[in-house]
Image (tube, rainbow, N blue to C red; front, side, top):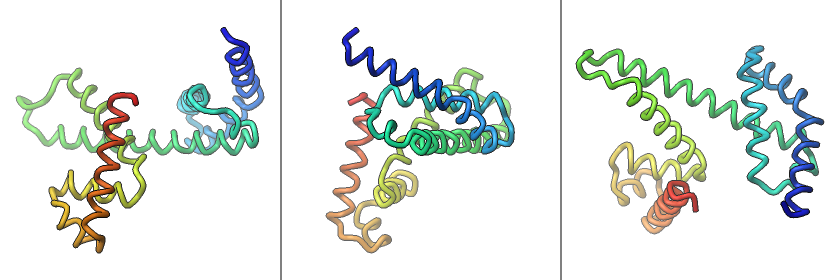
Length: 171
């Protein structure tokens, strides 16, 4: 382990010990006193810190941790909504068409990954992408509906596809 890696590990450890219990308490209040979910999300928050530059975190640790944790709470609620919608759609299907438990889990994980990916887009790019993918509109139709130039729609779709590619292949 290099001295920089060792310093980074110590910094993360210090952040964890200084702010973990505070973050769990904050998340408990946001999640209606659900202690297990709060502890899980606090842990996930610190795991996210392992993949980023710590300089902004060190400037205002609680503010930064709050933003990351809030994003994780939103993701948790989004996943719960997706799961409920999927289970409702599944309940409406005849039993012979019901997928296996394994297929359900894979589908839910895929839906969550797609939602996370699309939520990372800028708002205009997200709307353009969803109009194309979910409503089947072509680029001129999207440009007309949104009052944009065709070149803007093409550029935003290119950005969206590039971001999808980067996420899919870890680039």
